[in-house]
Image 1 (cartoon, helix red, strand yellow):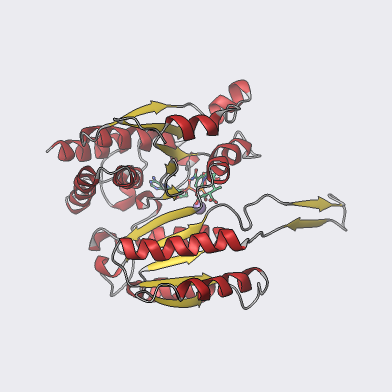
Image 2 (cartoon, protein in one colour):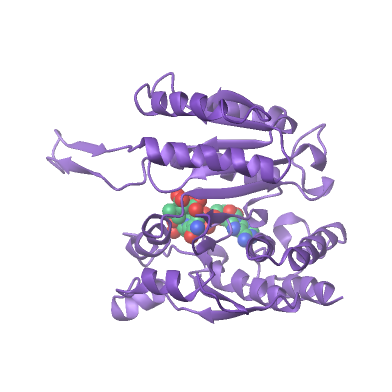
Length: 351
Ligand code: NAD
Ligand code: IPM
Ligand code: MN
């Protein structure tokens, strides 16, 4: 974090459609006149293939010291099958900068985007808080007798009391902050009795401290069914890293598709990172067809986090207007390209 004003934002467009949607989102953020400045970094598959750099040695320290937020497009490229650059950059930021709460709002902006029969947009409005620094993502494991019929593969799922407690507490505090009344924890404690037994015990302890918030639990398989059958029942859902990843792609479909979903990777008081939920979508790359709205809504989320709530509101309203007037890309029924959609929203934000 810096003491500087304007606030400083590091931009990592990354790979594929990440580059295209981030260009639009930055131009919309500039149109909002929020007092921020952007510094771009070329960390990506291109850079890795060119000189072997995924992230420079002092990269994370520099981001924490010199920036107030990080804005990332997407990482992932078929030319790097190991995905090493994405792991180093994206998971590196989440883990090494300790951005423990992955906040993924799930809001359907208009009935035209709602994929459910007999449901309206207003019934889809909840937030997933995903643990972001441990679980099955810790990269602890190994293989034994690889390539033989006796091969063994082990991938550890690490859950610490500290990690579980802080994200559950974050979910309750977040519910209070946004004026919501319910926090639901989802897990698979009927099978993963050790790991999710810990989540159960910690959840019960933390719940007791938040008498104003109603708490409940669902197994993750049942949750998926309920998300489709009646999403109106949810306010804030808290879960582990892997389940959070999976349920937020399902949740993105409730918003109109992956092109509409925003997210923040947060550690209160530290430099946090914001990225759309979608990936680099290689088949869409370079064709000016990717939906920039997820990235634009993510920019709004980041500005709000940095204290520019009026500017964020203006951007959110402009996206809603674009959806209602069909100034959208093909994935949600419009006829505009990525740039044209971004330009329309930027012009609307200017007013
Ligand atoms: P993806 O999100 O890139 O794309 C899946 C599908 O979702 C696309 O084929 C497309 O139909 C749709 N989609 C996604 N974004 C869209 C947009 N903005 N507009 C319109 N439609 C959109 O997921 P994938 O194909 O599983 O992964 C591709 C690469 O991206 C992989 O390398 C993966 O590891 C990576 N990835 C990165 C991130 C990230 O950086 N945060 C997230 C997810 C996937
Ligand atoms: C996401 C992505 C990432 C994840 C991948 C690209 C590592 O799917 O942000 O949802 O699994 O967290
Ligand atoms: Mn994902």
